[in-house]
Length: 369
Image 1: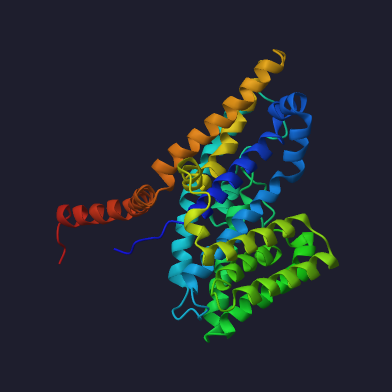
Image 2: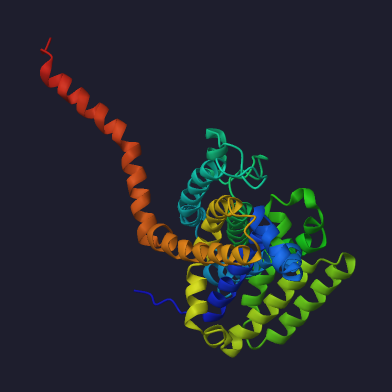
């Protein structure tokens, strides 16, 4: 069995980023956001304005890990990417759709007690299917939960990376295609807000993560990191974007950490590792929890600041715990496999019933020769 090397730095960064996104949504939606604004106005404003930048952490790390898995030495992808894309799709969509379904149920419950824009409209079958195929953003379908656009973008980015590495077919050409498209994103696509439902908009940050992995060779680390800095600084001079600054800093950190041993040593704390392992699940389930928490708090919104602070802390705590439970019973590979097997059995059940019915009829009806 292949031993997967632990990288506590990545777990720690993902764990912290997931918490910032959770707090960003806590500061953005419903009566709880108002309570946070009253209790800590500066913190509330900072989380609301800048908390979403934590998504760049996931984008850069995803590109870093994609390069590690698909092209660790800068080589082309030798086999067709379709099995990899299917595996990635299943890995993302099984917990995603369970979380979306949970959000639909929680929205229906919260709607009974709370009248607020944070509650999505009643879901339709078409809406649910658009989410299932990860095309909700592209099709302009209203999201059934907060932040779900990222899951579709993550799959698009991985698919685009795999296809570029496969189409390159040569050692130097394959990563060059990735980096050139990353440049195009930084200088053009990322400046077109109309493209924010497509991977091209985010591919600059993703490519920075990939470049950070490829910069890990000691012989070329300084030159690679220098080129990364110069290119991104030029893109920022053209159009300054704070999110790209975050991506640059993180890419440099990962590039240096890979060669200095920092991936295995930095942020090596058990609680950070635990948050990192559960980060995707926390990201998926925290909004359904916030829906119910806001609906419940709305019944006591006149109780004062102390109750508001307690409600905020309780909503954050329950979101983290719910994420850990979700990771154990839904996101974990063995749990996802059981869910897929159950769905496959349900899909095959009508055919099995029909087959059995025809077999029974053939035995019961007389043979007419």
